[in-house]
Image (cartoon, rainbow, N blue to C red; front, side):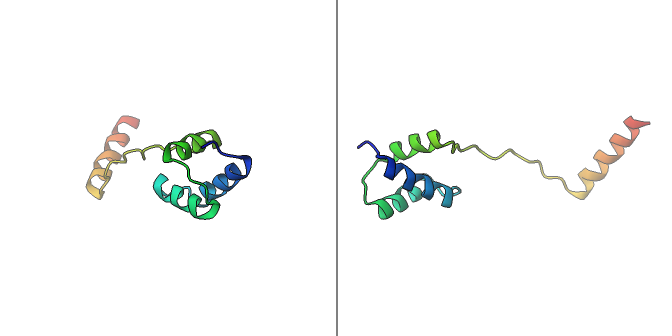
Length: 80
């Protein structure tokens, strides 16, 4: 089913409200609000058009006090 402008506005509103939620949750909320039956692929495509894109978080290494001290001393020796 193609989305109408009204449905797109509703979907945009739901995505802005629940931008951290997974797509199935957004789909469920959109169906409750609009009453339209759309697939999750349609939701995903429209989200991409709205500028919503998901990315995995960057891996941040564990820095404990001992690692921090070693790193700091290494930097200080290179600085002098």
